[in-house]
Image (cartoon, rainbow, N blue to C red; front, side):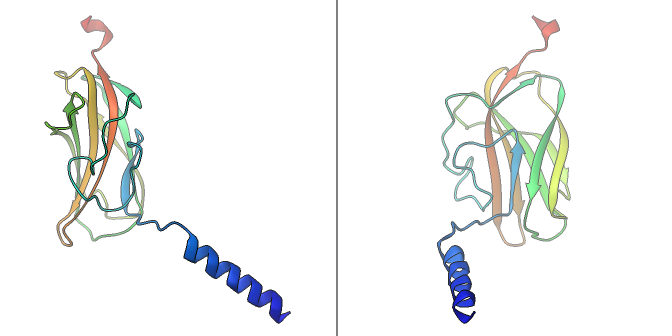
Length: 155
């Protein structure tokens, strides 16, 4: 009996010791982020050093509203603000805010917000969900490679 308990305890310790560490806090989940995206704080802006992918993961219509989803998995205090930014092209150089979410991370869980895409962008773009926590000076961001198309009536 003691051997079974000891074996189970050792197996549990090994599982914890060798499991990949997860520094989960928050990230955009739809559209999906670039390969290598984590939930943890980012090391550098604009997209944590992750280069654009070869293909887009979603297509949005300029001038139309769509839903963007994100998840908060660790609480960092109330009153935080999240931003949804867009940069035309694939160089990630000219982000501009297209949506602001007040109190975006006051509670743990998944969130959905409606975002309207600007009418002056079409083609490849980068969509970024951005959460900065001033009280601990930590930033979380997820970048997604997307396509923005003009509405059918504008062709």
